[in-house]
Amino acid sequence: MVETRSGKSTSPYTQEQQEKMAALVRENKERKELLKQAKLKAIAEEYAAKMNKLKEEMEEKKKAAEVEAAAEAEEERKRREVKGESSGTANKEAAMQKKNSEWIANLSLGEDEEAEMYVPQDERDALARELATIKDPLERQETEEEKKLEWKLRMKREKKRREEVNRLTAEVAKVRDCGQEVQAQTDISAKMDKMLGYLEVLSEAWMKERQANWDHDVALSAMWSGFRDFARDMVTHVGGEVRRLRDNVGKFCEGAIESAKAVVVVESEARPRKEPVKLKFPDAYGGKKEENFDNWEASVNS
Image (tube, rainbow, N blue to C red):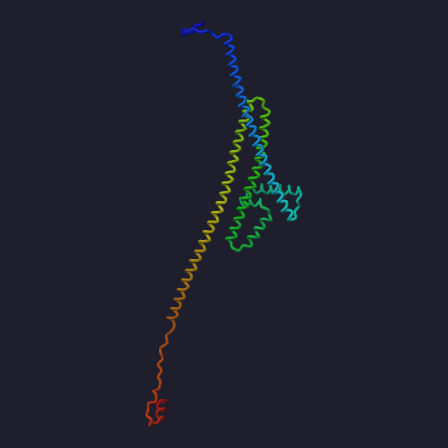
């Protein structure tokens, strides 16, 4: 028995009891370590599944972008074949390099000029011919603005597609590097730190992609809204001009009528009046039968 400071007595653990307690502590520690390892393994498997899914999605997007680019290149090649141009690979690459060089050289130009760099020359010539056939200046301006807006939207989509291809290529390369780095780690804690860091990178990339898509949609909506405002202003302007012309025509007609009335009044006042002419006719013969008719005729002629 051993007495404590409070005066109570207690008996120390025996060797067998100490071994049991140590075994229980060791079992609890091993069980906690197993649970921790199981959780880490589940997290690692979930992360690997997410990485594989993300990699597959990126590969699909990249393939879709490549297919779209190939379709556009095929369409461009067919257009050049129709025009009689060469469709060889060397000429195509030279044309693409020339187009890229022109685009880079014209970065300082306005948005309209930059949009025209994405439009083939034959399409621009067709627009010029179409505008030349339109006589109404308002209709010609509206057609030109609508076509330029279409070119701007095409430019936005092309730039967005190129940025998406470049971004997906970089993301795929980053995911591959992440997988290699995680595979190279032997310590579970180090692997978890790496995976958590890459999860943060992926979440940040997803937020940037979402923000970029939203900004792109906002830009397109703003362009459409600007075009609608322009069309509404144009219709309002044309309606105002028509009303003004109609009012001017009415005022002109009223003025012309009043002027005609005034001219008629002035002419009627200026025309000299003719005095009535009194005609004196000889009296009829009122003589008697026995009077001489020759004497009456002589008196009338005198």
